[in-house]
Length: 423
Image (cartoon, rainbow, N blue to C red; front, side, top):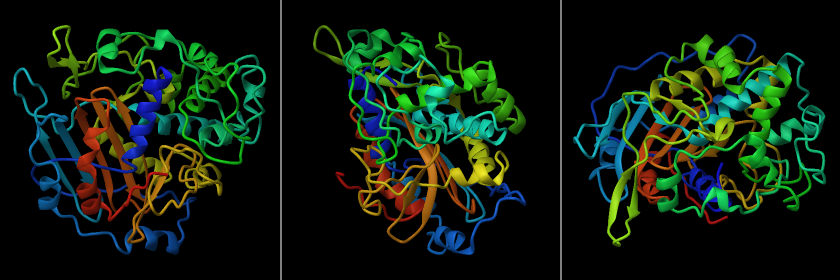
């Protein structure tokens, strides 16, 4: 989450890639085992068939070719991890450090941006399973005097699936102008979640709650605040106790609000910034505030994200009723939605509680999430039966989304054809 201009840009970019995308040259690796679904989670034969019947054969040559030429003016480096019973491959491309020329680490730490929302949704759904949160109850019941007065009642479920109609935040000078130059200077700035939520005060609702879907990071700031209010613990504590600890995700963390470090190994993130003399040059922004918090501030690695997504989709983290929420996409229109922009969406919602659904033109359905931070773009996706799981990370030098040119060939090789629309 950020100043509205920058915030809108990151939100728009994470959805523009719609799915997966990117990278990498490298060597094949042995396939790793997929998580098995728990006995209580049933997947219909039709759903499994739709996810696997037309899955393309994994093509390492196509994966390598899709990111040939890195580093370039848009992207310094990339990594990709493909696992599952339908084939496995991993590799890297470009450089991880422009100063030393060191390669991209195959399992390096990355800032995962809005992929953090999947962790947030999982925690809230666990609280729902414990009957500590009612998904159909108004958010205002759990957070009195937190949301600005005048906002219509919206349910917890509507926060998670972006049908709340929550307003966009108003402009504020303290959040900058959305430029690379501003971020390079102010990358350590941190703000409280309440300060961000206060920016919607006086803004009109985007639509009546429950009648449309619009991707809005404010929803997940509020969801994180709800977790803290209900449990009495920090959001970071709940993620550790419920998700990263039990799954052994040692390289996944919710950093302290003022901790700008990125654990080694990692690929450096850069932004091309125009100096006072008018000369553009790369600025290392690897160290930056993680303040987007439950909305987008987490750090992880490809192997941890693969393990987490496998456990989540495989039914290891949620009972059946809450597991169903992961795949319950509301039947409502997509309203100026940065995420649902493929030909198969046809102007309808594509997001559930934490995840987004992407359907290829060949009929393959995948579930996952994308994320962006300055210097970092990432995502994780999988078929419902976990026969193919993909985690990727890029290091873009710009805030324009130019790194997404790498996506089409990679998506086609991993899952099938996806045609983006203007929506």
